[in-house]
Image (cartoon, rainbow, N blue to C red; front, side, top):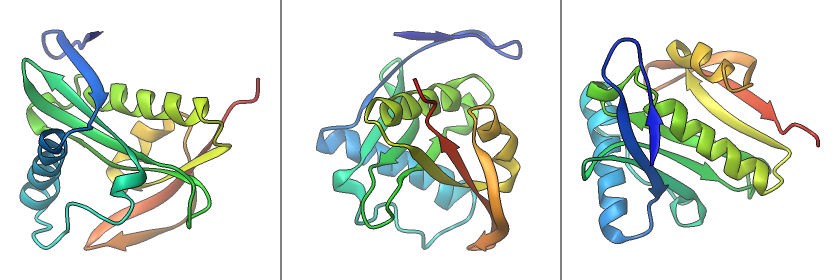
Length: 158
């Protein structure tokens, strides 16, 4: 169990674990759908992609319900590890859920020895990812009408 405290809301006790079963993956896709399709109005966005099977996907669980998710894709065709699909149910944002997921994904990437991880941040979240050592690079680009910024983090040596 991991405990997170927030000044704005009561403490949460959540468990973050790997999504491994079909039921887990269905929960991941459902949460992605709520955040990306419903909230962000990306109705035609597929909730899976070809990297799904080779990636580490995490689920944040609270009282038997799933409230957050994120994914680490190891190097492959893109040559560097990639964080993606970071999503927290809106009722639990600003309470440490997304931070805990990103921290666990970074820990996994570092433990695997990946020299660098990349992500494409929605521009409103650039500050959030900077807190984990990510630095913007390149120009802002648009994905389905939402501005994004490429960001990278180099694994600390030692």
